[in-house]
Amino acid sequence: MSLFTPLADSLVVARRNLIKVKRVPDLLVFTTLSPIMFVLLFAFVFGGAIGGSVTPGGNASAYREFLIAGIFAQTVVFGSTITGAGIAEDVQKGIVDRFRTLPMSPSAVLAGRTLSDVMNNVIVLVVMSVTGLIVGWRIREGFLHAVLGYLLLLVFAYAISWIMAWIGLIVPSPEVVNNASFVVIFPMTFIANTFVPLTSLPGPLRFVAEWNPISTVTQAARELFGNIPAGGGLQTPSWALQNPELYTLLWSAVILAIFIPLANAQYKRSTSR
Amino acid sequence: MADAVVAEGLVKTYGEVRALDGLDLRVPEGTVLAVLGPNGAGKTTAVKILTTLIRPDSGTASVAGVDVIASPRAVRRTIGVSGQYAAVDEYLTGYENLDMVGRLYHLGAKQARQRARDLLEQFDLADAANRMAKTYSGGMRRRLDLAGALVAHPPVLFLDEPTTGLDPRSRTGMWQVIRDLVADGTSLLLTTQYLEEADRLADNIVVIDHGRLIAEGTADQLKSQVGGERLEITVSDGTQLRRAEELLTPLAVGAVVREDDRRGLLVPVDGGASQLADALRRLDAESIAVDDVGLRRPTLDDVFLTLTGHAAEDKDAPTTGHAAAKQESAP
Image (cartoon, rainbow over the protein chains, first blue to last red):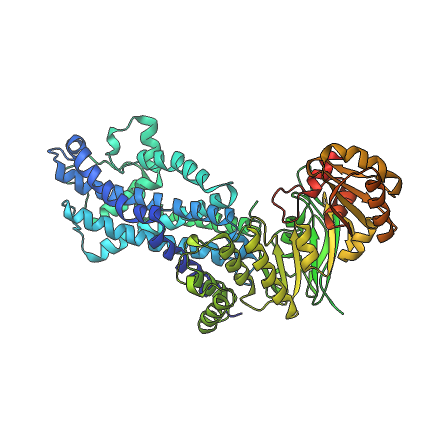
């Protein structure tokens, strides 16, 4: 057994998960069609209605540009639920039992799973970016900043997927992951600056939104893509929103530090019922 | 001869339920042990402990001389496991499934590919190699799952109910596959609810119920524990069955079992063929016609019923419905 065994095993598991994305219709739709739908839906349905509050002389195209980073953040965070549901399904179907009776690296199943979901999120981001460019979104801060923006989104989603991995191991069935994550993640992605400016939120909600890491990852992406609308409407009063990159990375680091050990410990006890 | 599997005093509780209650097992190298018991007897729990999936609350176990609790990873290098629910990835092809397992056994890419192809050939799956396992029949999935357990030529094999849910033809095919395997000297621990399966495949049988061992031995030894032969008679006219029972009761060394639904009697006897003739004379004297008559040794069904007081309650067992029928008509 060499030092590279855990890595090699993780890649075998990741490859298996990516093969599944091609073949499971639900996953394929989740990865390609629903991101396109989200961009089009928000841009054209809400664009006209909300646009005015984003920029003083607001118009729909300015809103679309504001919106894209928010949709990116929401979609990659939702993408992490694939991790939880996938792992819960593997436990239920006895696949984890098989893995756990093999002499493979015990950390490789979770590492491979979270890795393949990063790849999945890369595809999702590419699809959404192309759709975004078609509806008028532009990157205005240069290539390097844009890459950093994408990386930050991926790092944050990677951290969330470790929470989901842990949840996937403790729930009795994959459906529970989907339902539970919907109840938590859905509001979290809305009590944020993803789709509306924070100024429109009432007091307590606004406080939550200002410190919500989904707000900061959105804010960071917006800055790095150069999509902050000119002319105000976007006060950034909290420290979190003034330092969105740092705050997002701190959250990611804390989540990883807690949930990687937690999920790995749980994995070593997991077996089908 | 060394032991491939040894377990002593295994206890595992889930809340109030004692899934295993001090179980001892032993599989001498190169032999087949069948762990026989009804649903919920603790068979799967025992296999999960021996294959490192769960830890027992107390007790010790070793596989190929390696302690299961202290060195699970070393144990994993020597075992192959095939579960009750075929653990194949249904969205991968048969080939991809086996190739993945080979790589995770660290065979190396080239070897893993070759081994996958060989196993698909051996298990009659070569034609379906590039189809998703989702499209496989139940029997094909089981074969693929078993092939997955064999990828690394493990010296010790665990099969948890390998034929549960299979149709009779697939079941017979699976038995042949397993017999070929153990002919090569693989040590095998097999769990089953099917009495016939244990009889056909195993060198030794342990019968467990409620997490305890209640009997062990070879199929012959177990059968002799339950007593001698049984006279099995089917009368032509069901209305004469009670009269036939009265006539034959004096010959019996135990309780006569009447099976009304098949117009049959089971008479435990100890005199062999002479009592068969005697029984026929008695029936003939009262003109009771007989459709079928035979002397048979007890089946494992009888063993199970005698030892546990209840039948192995599985309707689609490959053995005939005797156990269930007897239970209904027993007083």
